[in-house]
Image (cartoon, rainbow, N blue to C red; front, side, top):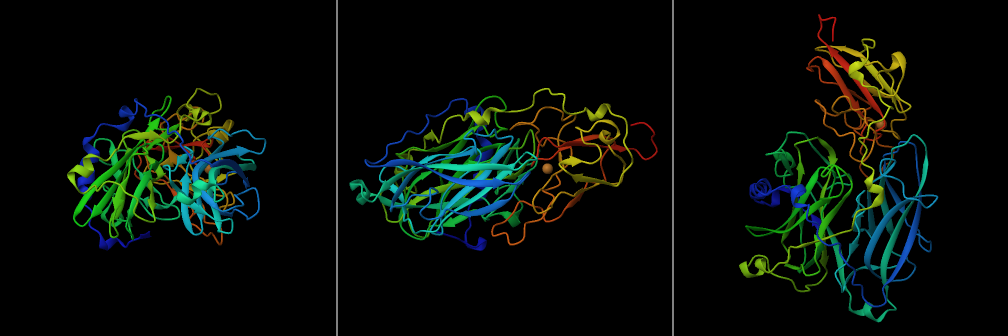
Length: 505
Ligand SMILES: [Cu+2]
C-alpha cells in the first residue's frame, strides 16, 4: 500500500456528494442498532491484556510516540497472529476515567513499520474475520502513537490497556491463517489527519469531506492497491457530529461504493458525543481487488447544529497479501451479492455516558454582568482567561469590552509547547456543566485554533496552530460573546462588543 500523488486519479467525487445529500440522516437511521459483532476465533487463540503506563501532563494535548519494549508486559513475547483487539484507557488505580477528564483523542499501533489498528475515544474494537490475522514477531518494532487530552489541570498517570486476541504459532490453526495488512484510507493523509466542519457548510445540513472541500484539498483521500488481493473487513472512524464514512473502490473509469459505516450514537445528544459505535462489515463481506485499483473515502458530518473542529474521516481496510476470494464489485451480479449489512464494533461504554449540559453554579451568565475594562488583549494563563473568565468572581470575571470595529487578541501564556488553549465560540450563556457533548462549538464566530507550538523534535504532526495568539474578527456586531476552550472545556469566557458611540450595551 502506498499513498498516490493527487494528480494521478480522477474519482467522480460529485457522484459521491449526490449520494451523500440524497440519503436520510444516519442519526435517524441509527435508531435501529445493528447487532454487536461476535467473535469466532480460531482454536488456540488466547486473550491477553498488555499495559503501557503513560504520564499525561496537566492540560496535555500532544501527539506522541511510545515504543512497546520487547520482553515486557507491553506486548506478546512469542510469534503468532493478532486476530482481535480491544483498547481501554485506565487510571493508575484501575478505574476508567470519564472522557471529560481524560480523553483518548487517538491511538495507533504500528507493527514493523505498518499500521495495524487505530482507535479514538469511541474505543473501537475489532475482530478479524476467521482465518485472517496480522503477522506478529516479538522482534518487530512495535510503536504506540497516542494523543491523550488531559482535560484537567493536574498531571495524570494513565495506563493504556489493550487486550490482544492472539494465535501463537504453536497452535495448529496458525498454519492456515492468511496474512492481512491495514490499508489506511483517510480523508486527509497525515500523522495528524484532521479538517474542520463549519456550521452551515455543505448541503442541507450535511457536509461531505473532501468532496465539498476546496479543490486544493480534494483527491488526497486515495490509496493505491499495489497487488491482487481481497478486502476482508472495514469500519469507519469519525468524530462527534459525524454521520458516516463511505468507502469507494475505483477500477479504470468505474467507481463503486463498497461500504457505508454509519455512526450509531447512544443516549441523549444523538450525533454530538463520543457515546458512539461504528458499523463494521459482517464476516460475509469480501471484495476481490486487483493491482491498480484505488480505494477512497468520504466522510459526512451534520453541519446544521455546530462546528466540529479537527474532525476525522478514516476507513481502515483489512487487505490480504494474496487473493482470498470475494465478489467482483464491477459486475452487476457481484455487486448485488456484496453483503453491506453492518455489525457494531462494540456496545455502549459506561465512561461515555457523561454528556454534560446540566445546570451548575460554576459559571456566570456573562450577559448579566457589568462591563469589564476596555482591552486589546486577554492573556490565557493557569487555565484561566485572565479577564472575563466565567469562573472568576468580581471584577476579573466581567467581560472585557472591545469597541465595534476593533478586535480582541488572546495570548496563550501557559507553556506553549505543552498546554494548548482555544477560544471557541459557544452559544451564550455557555454556563452548563462540561461533558462529552457540552459545550458545543455553536457560537456566532469562528475558532482560534489551538494556541501553541509543536514541541521541539516532534516526530509526528501536532495539533498546535504554530502561534500563541489569535484575534477576534473586527466585524462583530455589538453583543456579549461567550466561548470555551475545546481542549479544556471547563475553561469558559466572554467578551463584549460595544458600538463605538453607545454607552449602553
Ligand atoms: Cu485550554
